[in-house]
Length: 377
Ligand SMILES: *Cc1c(COP(=O)(O)O)cnc(C)c1O
Image (cartoon, rainbow, N blue to C red; front, side, top):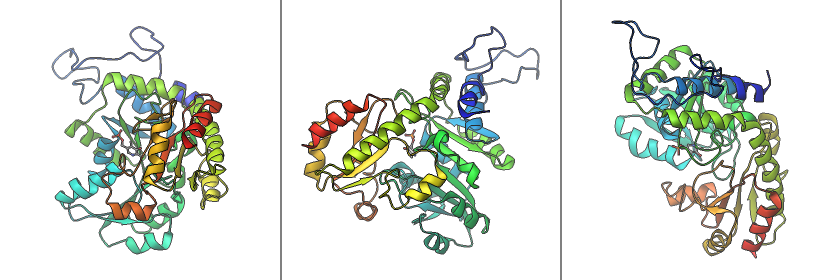
């Protein structure tokens, strides 16, 4: 079956009780039991909810995974995956992940004895030297936020599996429409559904998809045991969002390419970060691993002052954090999403004070270009 057919139908069977074509929002905390120890598979809504179950089936299918679990946020999904790691075990973390992921390791998990090292996962030799005897997991994001470096998922998986480590990929930027990490040997896929999967900037959520039954049992146990579940209403919203994921991603990709090319030729722009540009150092890898390049574009304006002029000069693009919604959003990674990353690490990664990131929306692209053009001049 094709991607859109799965997106529209997986988990979306008509409601058994009424025939409702759209999965109802089961806004309930508990369920009536027929007799002592006899129920319909639903006991308490932290543990099971039919709206959430529909979404879990849906996104798991889109990621080509057997199991899927929906969480209250992308961060709680990532935290649940890290509960597979125990004190004294070691994780290799890509050196350019989402700022909140770095903060989770650096400020929270480190208090519980989880060891970690940052590594440039785009360089196999560098990654290889980061392994330790107690390395349990390799956590990567590709393309990375915000400078769009691409990691070879098959190469990382082969390397990690040879050393008995689990590979996790944050697939938020591509969504399963453009990249299915499991097809490249990745063990666990995580998402912030807040972004492209929901796609309308009106819900915060997260997702974990995987095939290993033992790890899946543990993630499910953690989901219930800690309780950072996605609400029925948010589950409904994301389920509605994924039905149009294919058409939205096609539109983001089309606009993203046009905006990246426009910026690349603009005299006020020093550098553009977009894997779809032939000038991107990993353009060939991106073409092999992704079926599109998406709508995330970052560009260097040269200084904080220049960045400020662009960020405050735009009229159509909204200045704000987050990404992946139908509307174009513009942000300043150094002071917004990546403020928790130390200044010297930021500088090393290219997250300068002059860097501006755009989540290119699906408005008419001429209008986006016109807006950026007037803000840049
Ligand atoms: C937003 C984001 C997260 C965190 O997700 P929340 O839903 O905000 O908790 C994690 N990874 C990436 C790549 C993100 O963009």
